[in-house]
Image 1 (spheres, rainbow, N blue to C red):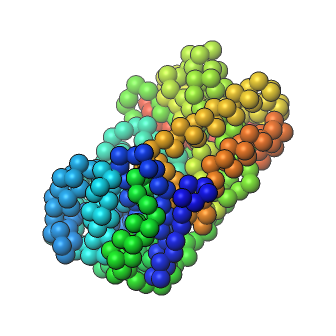
Image 2 (image 1 turned 135 degrees about the vertical axis):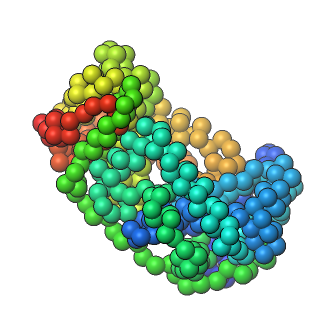
Image 3 (image 1 turned 45 degrees about the vertical axis):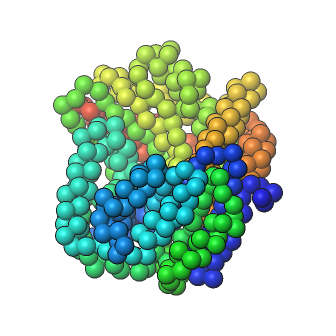
Length: 425
């Protein structure tokens, strides 16, 4: 086994294979990452990457239907699924370790021989549209959707990963085939396997099973347009009992040196019941049942977002309190005791998130695809441990600015103008 627990090999085709052996595991997790998501789409084709993710399960030349694909994995006691984000699509399954060959074969078959049958395409169209409607029917999720729009405006990062009912309606088979030809090429894909196996076994199987993959480098993705859109506060009124609130700030990219300090800052601000937002907004003032913050990182930017569910009459006060908590981190250095707790929380959370073969395969595959290397676990821990109060305050000053705040609200009331003034005050 390699020093850091994983080994990487690039096949002649350009497909990268990374394995993380876990000899004591009873399973193997097989993941195929493709470097394409909603950021690679045009307005007309918005939702194509996600729709295609559905279609890849609908039958291949060897397994003619979705049922045959599912039965192959589930019949071996395994599970299978996929997801699409702004920058990647991942297809995965997890099976008992002695079914590794089958698991790899199913994914290789899907990547190289999917039918994209017109009849299935038309049938699945309504399923994807139902998924979009379901997001709309969940006010918290819809507030998150609107927050992307308020943060990035009319560019791919501001659009929905799933697209709209209208864009999905207009997508045709030629769109799917062009998309596969451009993006599902070996140099833009990573096979990541973790669990009870060996690097040699995985690479030997990959050489054989993925031999049909071909194609040149994938196209480039348009760089993000920085700065807030004109409409950086979006309120959608609905006759419901709670206001679902999102506040976002443009943050740091995947490879930004400040990413470790931001993780600690985020832990101080809004992760867990001992975070500042939870203590101030919920425990001390009783303004919200749920409140927390999170960080998303992309190749050239990132987002720090805060979400809360509040009583409509508390919307303005909650917004004011959140803004005050952000500015306290700008004005005052975090105390040593709070900083130590935040560091320990972040490091512990990071370690606990790597307990399963699935988690190990996901981390290795995404890092290799998006960054080109996998950061050793102990290096991440050391860099988190090294974050100082000055680092946290410096990043707070970098991000927590009046011209870097966006907001979304889905609830019974809310004045966009008033909220915009509050954010800018």
